[in-house]
Length: 272
Image 1: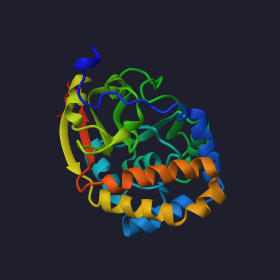
Image 2 (image 1 turned 90 degrees about the horizontal axis):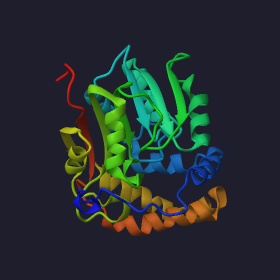
Image 3 (image 1 turned 45 degrees about the vertical axis):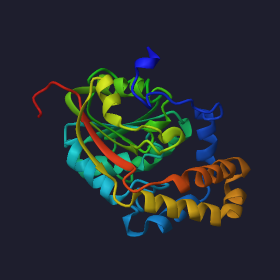
Image 4 (image 1 turned 135 degrees about the horizontal axis):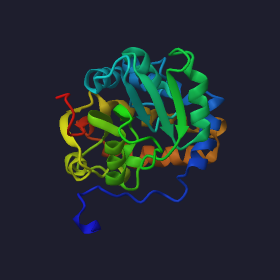
């Protein structure tokens, strides 16, 4: 019953948030480095430029994934909502694991395939179109799963976490970043991820605040608003309007410690 689900288990995804809409967004951003340049300015030395995230994924985050995913040569890492593939490809190169990236945007998947050769040898990475809650991957096929700054987009967070559990081998780990806290509005309204993990059959192993999360994101939002005219010119009015709305609505609500990195584990197996 929905009434029995933990707080934050569901989110009403806006009608316009579709894979096709993300395709259009990736097409628009492919022709300009503006968003990556603004993220680099906001995050400073914490920004992993080679990875080229639009924000939030920092050197600290990447290091913690390496430390907690516990994968290496001969293991398979799955990157959910992989986008253009940068974080997953960097992690595959750093750990020696093979990579499967999943994203609902076919444009992002194609961009990831094109970037793969810059990070890992041929055959070490593949990318497929799929949903957070329906990856299409085989049962128990992943030694670890990572999802950076995207799990809150899932309309049914418990269903997504159950999909993660299904894909993980027994003893495998899931590392993700998200917002957490009762004051967070909209898609960030998850007071505590642990009950959701438990409802999906995953065990919380470790959780820590992402250093500088609120400060970095506030700076990035401020830069979006400062350069809004240029964003409109280079990305179009639709993406610019969405970015402006996010910056004005979420920016003032950000609190220290709100961004967290979470490590969960599928019970079973011999790795403890």
